[in-house]
Image 1 (spheres, one colour):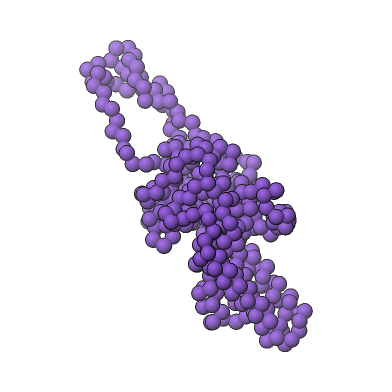
Image 2 (cartoon, one colour; image 1 turned 135 degrees about the vertical axis):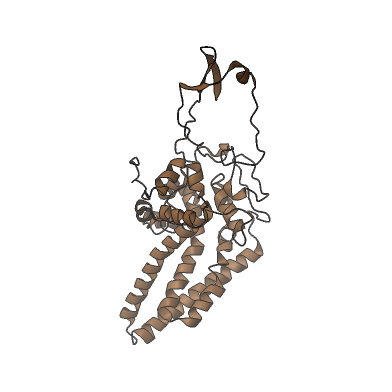
Length: 346
């Protein structure tokens, strides 16, 4: 705010509006850290504030906090208060302590044993569906198995979106249990290229903990073959979602031809679809298995509704709200649905 005298004892307070940063793809401008828009300030041009000359002479410098802010260049939500930092620059950098880009033997063992178990349970479940549920009718058993697999694939995309939304918008590096995942996902917005430097087992091994052998073994122990098959496929897709995610950040020549085919057929998330998520304020396109559910969830306002409910329960705002005050205002008045891409909010 700048002060200039007008007619002796009057002071004209002119506040220059802070222009909100237009949505930008971080892949195109990665070296600037987190590209977040500053809080929009309404124009107060020409507003007269009465003050005498003696008062005008006394100027106090504002006290600046040393605490990090989401308006700071290079700020990463998941590192706020966590003691973790990420230097700027386009380099493959890890953001969590103890992490590495080099594939470790324990990661290979974890992923190999998990995938073998999931495939074994899937095969045995299909066998049981054919022999027990369908009385040996192979065609009927295969048809039922395909239906279960397809429904699991669709819902795993939804599940990946809910997980991605939650860790993008809440918590930080010190959050119990999920702190490392939260810092990594939120830090990914400032260094999206880091994931492309990871090998398969290095990239997906963390997801083998919540979606691994103990989980599917417990489910299979208390359920029938269809439920076992559903969750074996579901857990496998959740683990593989991080590899699909990696492919979406790589160029076509950097991934196998069959991986490009999976993206072309919509079986795994495409580059174009996921690129929309990396537009500030990272408010949509959270699903990273196939992206099949993204339009439905975004246009229905599903995640805005969840954010509003969280806010009403505990007063915690999502990170997307902090970046975009207009999104916060719209959500609080119940305007949850995001406009279709290419149109402006009403």
